[in-house]
Length: 387
Ligand code: PLP
Image (cartoon, rainbow, N blue to C red; front, side, top):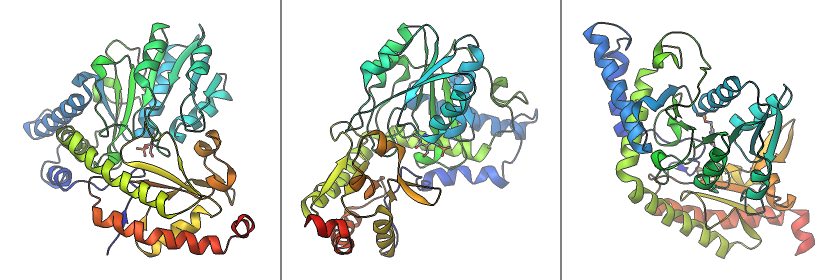
């Protein structure tokens, strides 16, 4: 068997249909979309189409979509835009479990003149909404809360939060990089001002993202240069990737419920069988309110990295819940914020599925994983103590 790829929250395979649509724009239609000639105009036309496809998936208008180079750039653009557009307000708020794209920028801003509130989560990864609302003030410029967490898969109540935040006249941004394509989103019906997405998380290419900016929202560009994106983001467009992102959004819209029902069934089978076959195993995150493709499983008293290495020998690609910082394997900030005990956080593995996974692949993981955990536990002094 070749690779079994269950690491789709890290990145996804580019769909064949996406690749096919991109290819002519490398060497056949290579014109610059800003050129006046018809050749360039053909490219401009496809970019307009891509913008409309993204807008349609999100329930937005085309002119509310700005192309960027990735999810990180979309997040940075949104956050920097809000603080530059509201120079008198010096308080910003986010959650403790954001992706580094938001978390690290907030930490940087906390050292550069901003008062920053990080909202905690509970043991299941659910946001403390009372804490969030209590900390909104007249000085708050921005609230940025991710829609779905990349590690636990937990989905936050963005509809409710954005409503409360906007009623107070505060700008609301959401990092929806892990949400897009995984459940229906209708930005017309929700009070979101800014919304980030990334191509490579939904079977589009890497190196392209988009930022939704609601019509009427004050906006200051991050990359200032040419007139591209109506002056909202300078730089010649990454044409083929933009076209790929548009196609990926079109496919996501057409197959949203089929794909996600299928993926959820496989995820549930994987999770339930592992829980049945392996003792001292915990699911990290709210099982009732999660992305359909994600499960974060803590195997107590084993090292996640050892599990990953042993799975890798069978071609199984997943992620651990640790971040390799300064030579030591620290549990990730997400698992720490959730209060996952050390013994469990260290042995946490994230499986994130896609529409390309098959039942045969899931059965293979279910067969190979329990003996791996058993072998590793036999070597664990902690395990011997509690046995
Ligand atoms: N936000 C979330 C929630 C993510 O999961 C990721 C990528 O893992 C990003 C932002 C960054 O996206 P990109 O890799 O396109 O910069």
